Image (cartoon, rainbow, N blue to C red):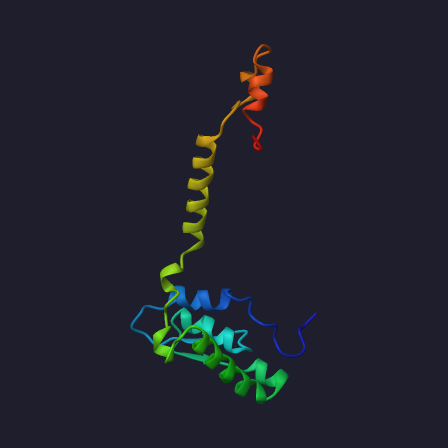
Length: 142
């Protein structure tokens, strides 16, 4: 069935990260998608947005949403001791990565964990004489 009404909010932080990944540094970036709070706006700014756009939130909640958003953004800035938006624009980009990089890191971590594993590596390595010792070597709470 066709969707009637405003679109659902963008899955945060998918919307801001997609923009951050595709925009070269010298360009101006406007964040949009699912922005209904000052914290949402801060997420986009932390990922390098120069501006944020709000449409559906205002359609659903009315114009006071903008006033609340501005107040919440100011609260965020005060909490983190930022004096201006420029103090935190793009600050999270150093922690941003790609899905491919995450998969690579996960594979490395699993390989490292397997290499450090103590105990019997496969069923054919069990011996009748060393069963007790072999079993105890795999107990994690000792």
